[in-house]
Each structure stands twice: as C-alpha cells, then as structure tokens.
Image 1 (cartoon, rainbow, N blue to C red):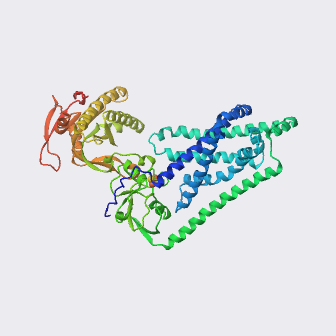
Image 2: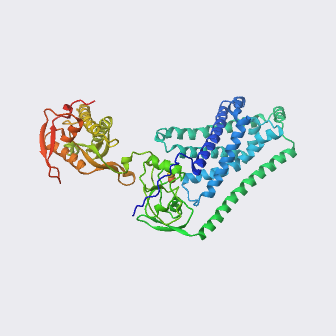
Amino acid sequence: MTASLPPMPSAAVWKLSGAQVINRLRLVTGLILFTYVLTHFSNHLLGLVSLDLMQAKQGDFMGFWWSKPGTYTLLGAVLIHLGLAYWALYRRRSLRLKRWEAMQLLTGALIPYMLIEHVITTRVAFELYDLQDSYTYVLWMLFGGEKQALQAATLVFAWLHGCIGLHYWLRLNPWYDRVKPWLFALAILMPTLVLISFFQTGREVMVMMRDPAWQAQTIAAMKLPPPDKAAHLIALRDGIRWGMLGLLALVFFARYARNLIEARQQQVRVHYHGGKAVAVPKGRTLLEISRMNNIPHASVCGGRGRCSTCRVRVGQGAEHLPPPDANEARVLARISAPPGVRLACQVRPDCDLEIAPLLPAQAMPHDGFAKPEQTHGVEMEIAVLFADLRGFTTLSEQKLPFDVVFILNRYFAEMGEAIGAAGGAVTQFSGDGVMALFGYEREDPTYAAQSALKAARRMAERLEALNQDFSHDLDAPLRMGIGIHQGLAIVGEMGHGRATGLTAIGDTVNTASRLEGLSKEFHAQLVVSEQVLARAGIGLEGAARHSIVPRGRTVPLEIFALARALDLPLLR
Ligand code: FES
C-alpha cells in the first residue's frame, strides 16, 4: 500500500468545527434533560415513604423547572435535542446500527410521542387553564387501564435513553471501568424503585377515591377544565403528535430523495487493504461505507468522532482529502496518530481511496485512550529485563496443576509489582518467564538503567518473601535468574486483536534474553551488561566479570554476574 500523506491539520484546530458544536449541543441538552428526569425520579422515590411526603416535597425538587428560567431551559433543551436527533437521522447514510445505538434511537423516537399527553394534561393544562396538577391528580389520571402501562414504559424508556447516552459519553474515560458496576446498579435500581413508588402511590390514590366525600373534595381542588377546554387540550396533543410524525416522515423522505440524487452522481471506489473494493456514491463517511457493505469496522462511540477506534491508515488518494477539521485533529492528536491516519467516521471521500482499518472490529473503549507516541513504533534506547524461574519445570511435574498455577500467579504478581514500582512495564509473562521494559516512556537512558536495576533488587526481595510464604509447601525455595541489557530497540504496540500489547524487538532484547540464560551458567541471580552499569553510573564490587560475543556481533560485550541481586547498591 503506497502511503501518501494527507494534508496536516489546519492551524485553526482550536476552533470548534460544525460537528463539534453539534456534538456539544447534543451533550449539553441531553445532560439537562437527564438532570430533569433525575430530579423528577428523586421526587418520585419519596412516594416509597408516603404520598403526602412526595407531594409536600414536590416544590423542592421541581421548583427550578417550574420557574421561568427552568421552563425555558427545559423547553429549549427538548427542542434542540429533538431537532439534532432529526438532523442526525437525516445525516446518517446507513441505518445499520449496533444494538444499543438502535435502542437509543428507538427510545428517542418513542419518548416524545408517548410523553406528550402527560405534558399536555399537566404542565400545559396548568399554564392554560390553571389545572392543579398535583400528584394525586396525575396518579388518578394515569392509574388503571392502558395509560398506566404507557406511563410506566415512558419512565423506563426515558431513563434507558439517558443512561445509554451517558454510557457512550463516559465510556471513553479511563476511570469509567472502575465505577461502571456501581453506575449499572444505580441504573437498574432507580427505575425499579420509581416504578414501585408509582404503583404503590397510585393504588393508594385509587383506594382513597372510593370515599365519595374525599373524591368530591379532591376533584374540586384539581380545578379540572370544562369539556370544551379538555377537548382543546386533546386536540393540542393530537396536533403535536401528528406534527412529530410528519416531521419524521419528512426526514425519511429527505433521506430517500438525497439517496436517489447521490446514486446518480459519480461514484467513488474504496479499496480496503488486503480486502475487497466497493463502489459507493459520494457523501458517505468511510465508516458508513464499511457498515453499508458489511465490512466489520470498530466504532466505539458510534461515529461521533470521539473514540478514535474507527481510525484508518489512508494510502492512495489521501492527498486529495481535505485536512482534518478541528475535532478530528484534536482526537488524532490525543492518540499521537502518525501522518496518514484519519478517523473513518469523519472522512467523506470524493475520490478513489485506499484504506486500512487499524483496529479490530471488536476494539474496546481503552483502545481510544491517549497513548504515548512510542506505541506506534519508534527506535529508542531502553533497558530490557528478562527473568526466569530455575527448575520450575521439575517442580511443576511434582505438583498438582492447581498448585502450579497458584504458585506461578503469586510469583507473577510479586514480580509485576516490583517492576511496576521501579518504573518499568511488564510486557510479557510467558511460561515462567517475565519480560519488562524500562525507559520507553521518556528518552532518559540513566533513568532506564537505574529503574531496571532497582527492579532487579526489588524482585529479589519479593522472591525472598515469597519463599518464606511457601516454605511449608515447597521442598526447595524458588530460584530466579535475571538478565538486563540496554541499547537501541524498536518499541511499539504489536500483536493482533486482544493479544496486542507494548513490546520491543531488536538486538538489545535478544541480548538481554541471552544474559538471563547465562545467569544459570554463571550460577548467578543477575547478569547485567556493562552498558547498564555505565548508564546507571554505578560499579559492581564483587561481581564476576565476563566477556561474551552476542550473536551476529563481532565486538565482545562485557557483562557482570552477581550471585544475589540483593547485593546491588541501593539506588534512589
Ligand atoms: S467511531 Fe468513534 S471516532 Fe470514529
């Protein structure tokens, strides 16, 4: 694939693009509506205590939304959110959606239609005819018959729609996975309790209504509008419902007309690297083109230009693409995307293009998190550490599989923590071996060498502690060999799918591995190259000095073998 570079992001990356403005408006209005639902639901929860308490505290919860600023805020949010939803529906070239996206779209379309009667017979009736829309009135109106089920479904749909939106918004944050179980529990608990409250208080009202005196007094207090005004309210409800349906039909008609026009226009060919080529009308995004042609393509944020998981490397034709807008440029900068990489959900090709999706279709949100530049592949000086357990094969033959796995997992946990605490990253646990890199996140050879030596010392400490824990379970203590070398290596994320991770390749890595192997031959716990000691600025008194010729090299390498890594000088 010939990689021609697209133009770099324009200088005005700080400006908001049209798509960014729309995304933010959708988010802000969505948050306003969710806050409204949350306060409304919180008020409902008091119904679990009593109807009187729920009614008495209504002003506290809903006071802001009843005020003029609150009303305009809410009304504005509804209109903008709805308008943006229609616009998004028009803009979407493909209606092939992921399950949760489809659910969000469906609930979003149904909620206004289902909710409008409730709004007309409460707030609008109050504003127009001074109807007193207390909870008693609302429950009396809704309870019994199909309205009750409709209202319950509306509550659930509104909550579900908001939760899906929040999930899509928050899931790109690294901390989200930690709090997700709690949020999920809350997402289930809240509507469940609200529904219990709804049915409990509704039944309470219906029982009280059996008392003719109470019923007469309560209905009088409601100030129900006379029949002609009630008919006006119903006409208003029907008019709005027809209006919404008409608007929806208009959107679909506009989509149909646009698709017809585009189908007659010149087509562009998109060639997937190593895969098929498709011809499509202009105007669709690369992500839509993938979806329309059943080509699996990652899109964690659903094409909103936020997650970066749809990213593709663009080959031929890239030079004809317009530069990324501010939003796309910001997302690409966040992941340190190299030149030639674009977001498939933001690029609408108007010429033939060659692309290669960079992530598997099952990419997860964390694939879109900010990453250091090194993950894309750079050559840099790092320290590489290999460690291996001595005689573990024999041990594993004498132990039950469960014991072997338990011991190994304890060992890996201890070594992983020791390496992490020293500033390194474990890149591989394989068999009973460990590989770790140091200094890959910053160009500082001294830091890399010192971190690797610190890690070796800590690993030896942890192994001693582990051997004490296992003293009654093992015939002989666990023994470990460590090799450390430093030099240039190619560092980057390598692998495929979920088996992708940071690693390094090159002579430095091979030599570090060889030093670990030599530790057995030299009866040493640690074998370290001269380069590491020189970079760390330390000498090793009492270490045996050897000279080896690494494979493929002619120049000998000076190495030092230390019986105990615990004898390494303490580094700060
Ligand atoms: S699908 Fe998320 S950025 Fe394109």
